[in-house]
Figure 1: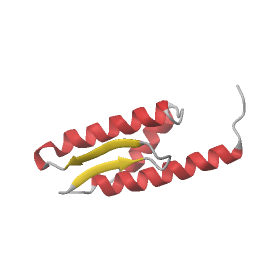
Figure 2: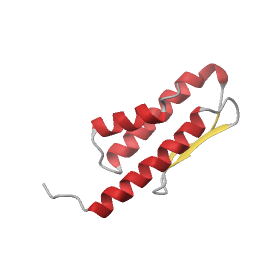
Figure 3: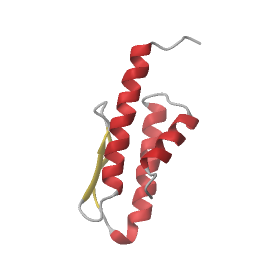
Figure 4: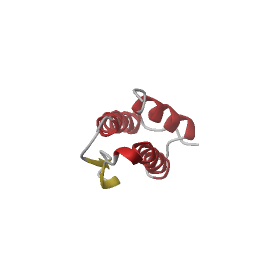
Length: 92
């Protein structure tokens, strides 16, 4: 296994921090449109209207999309992704 470059880790950390901030803003929405784009440029969740009766399901959808994106695109471990999601949805 190759050791990762420090620059790559710093870049990933910055992407994660920006993504967590965006998720917190989207999770706090009571009305409007949910949309989530990763700082890497990839769309994780296309614009979706917030429906109050489906809010929990929409949060679950957002979590699963983030999890898949971080695992497939950024090659993060399940443990790391779990920590990120816990931080992103901590106010729930």
